[in-house]
Length: 104
Length: 201
Image (tube, rainbow over all chains, first blue to last red):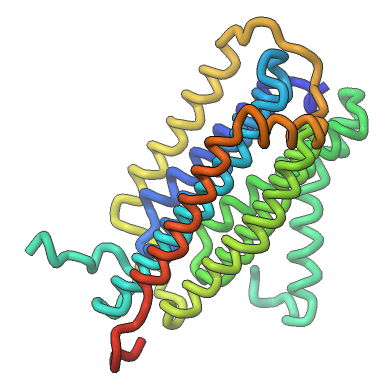
C-alpha cells in the first residue's frame, strides 16, 4: 500500500532534502554543512531510485544513475573535506562565519 | 531529560522512547489500515531516516551528528532495498557508511575542539532557514501529490546482472569518466590537504 506508491518515496525524499537544506543554511560548522549536503544528495538519489523502480521506461537506468551519483558524491566529499581541512589549518576554526578574509 | 531520573536509567529510557517513535507508525499502519509487512518495514526505515536526519542537523555535539548520519544512511539503504534496487543499497552501505562517513568522522576529529556552546551551533539566520525548509518540504509534497506521473508500473525489482550488463555496455563511457573523476578527486584531495614542510596541523 504505502511502500508500493511512488508518492510515498518522493515525499520522503522531499522531506530529507528539506532537512538537508535547513542544516546547510543554519549550521555554523563547515563540516556540518558538508554533512547536510550529503543528506541532500541522498534525498535526490532516493528520488532517482524511486523513479527507476516505478516508471516502466526507466527500470535499470535509475539504478545506474544512482550509482554514478554515489560515486560523484564520494569525489565531492573527498575534495570538500580536503578544502575544509586546508582552511582550518590557516584559520584555526571550523566555523564558516569566521571565514571573513574576503569581506573585510 | 529531567534531572530526577537516575543516570543509569537514562540510556534505557532514551532507547525506549526512540523505539516507540520508530515503531508506533508502523504498528498503527498494520493494525488500523491493513498494511502488510513491507509497509511496516518502509515506515520503520522512513521514520528512522527522518529522525536521524533531524538529529544530524540539530544536535550540538558534532561527533554525534556524524554517528546519526551513519544511522540515516543505513536506513536509506533499507529503503533502497524496499524499492528493489539491491545493488544501489549495497553501494550505499559500502560507499556512504564505509567510506564517506569515516572520512567525515576523521575530518571532524581533525578539526573539532570541544562541543561549541549551543548558541554558537546555528547561524543567526537559523529561524528563517527553518521556515524556508518547511516551505520547501510543503511545496515538494504538494507538487508530488498534484502531479500526474503518467503510466506507472508495479514496483520493479532491479536484477543485478541486467544492471551490470547495462553499466558495462550502454553506460561504459560515463562509467570510465566517473573512474577518472574519482582518481582526480583523490589526487586533488591529497594535494589540497597535504601539510607543507615544517607546518603542523
